[in-house]
Length: 334
Length: 286
Image (cartoon, rainbow over all chains, first blue to last red; front, side):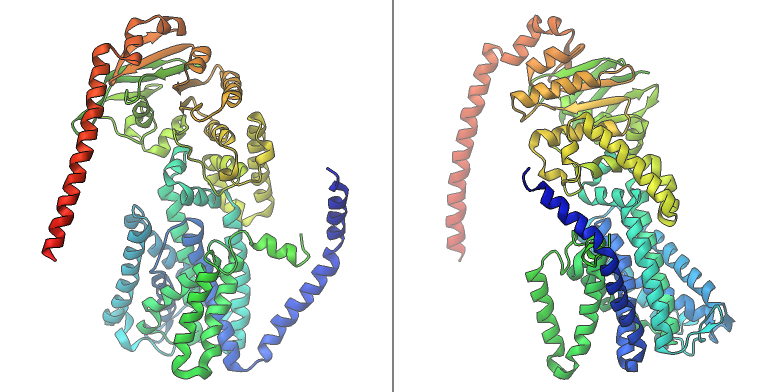
């Protein structure tokens, strides 16, 4: 045990660091956040997309990363949230609900749909679950396309009202940037706390060995329904914001590609890791925009980069063990 | 408290694994179930834990029919088990493997745990303290932060027992706890098992290590071909003629074993020949 004093020295020194480390990182982070509204509108729109996908991916991460259930139809909950806003805040039915109520209802409808989907399919695992959820995503899209009386079919619903939150009218991309940023902070905190809760432990146990988890008294059906409904409610919330932001919804926005992109962000970013989800959302959303100069080669390059990422880092760009605690430590916090 | 198998039978298709077995258990005692391979020992545990359904009969805990319950309800009723092949939550730490057992107690507070930092800290502290205590009890405290799969084999076996105990069971069933352990690990296991004997707990051990069985058991059930062949104290069982025969096999049985081995060799040869024929015929069809 010769090197123990040195080790102790190192820890005391790193304990003295936080003040400086914290201050400098706080300044950098705040400066970045404050600088964004000064960017061009197009760039802010891309950043808003990153934030929306970060929300969606953090939600899907609960199902895929924590509970270990592959859901390929996540866009359904996003669509349900978006259409909730479209129906509750547009001239289509002439309803005009406060934005906060629409947010709550969108989340609630999402959660309800998550439970409705969950009850019949949670006996399935792995590939079978993936296929059924994929089908669910398609069913919702096809319904939106065909139930004209309720959704106006492929034409979509236009002229959604401008949302207002506690006297703050959200009309520009800048406004939505701040709203999304706040929501990402709240949702990430809640998801992180979920992961560390006893329910998060139960999800991990189910992911490892479902049968043994039942053997220690975990009601696996209930725990999985919790995963499905919480993630679906966040999906619904993101949908409400998306609709309010676009002020237009149509079934075209909710194709299988969206489900796939969300799942890819989780898997390529870092499965079960919120830091990975954020990094994944940034890379996978910004990359195709950054490649716009390459015209017809754009998607080819995007595809190749994705394959290379997965080959080089099969556990994701930021693997599970480099989680939030690790990031905070690196920033001189904790 | 009482725990009993009441006239239980189990068929797998046409194979009868358990035939009308009735066993009773009393708290504060260590029971062993022994018998040759295929006697149906693990099947009994699997039925009690809800992994297998029973074909007929009942398994009763304090008069409650476990056969009517789901697996997690059986655990909550007070049945805990370990597995013949270790089934820990491999990539969770040793500590988390135990903490998760408090799910049943704490899940009701999960909303508070997520929304209220103070409640969250209190619940987490409670989980950690109780799990650390259990780790210490099994001499595993040094492994707390390590993934379960990285522990030495013997420690994994102990951790699995610790996990079972964390659910605060009335009945603890251990499926071959000493299998794969060396002599010193087995000695440590024996010490822990004897220390776990308490007034409130029924312990049922399935084991092939006869030294261990004979030294810890208060009562032994011998299973043979799905039936109870004998029961009694260690001394009763050791001197029982039927048991000796079941274990060593009579001369007639030995002959039968030899015949089956020769038969299997022949079958292998036949299958090889068939493979060649199939291979050739495929060649022709091309």
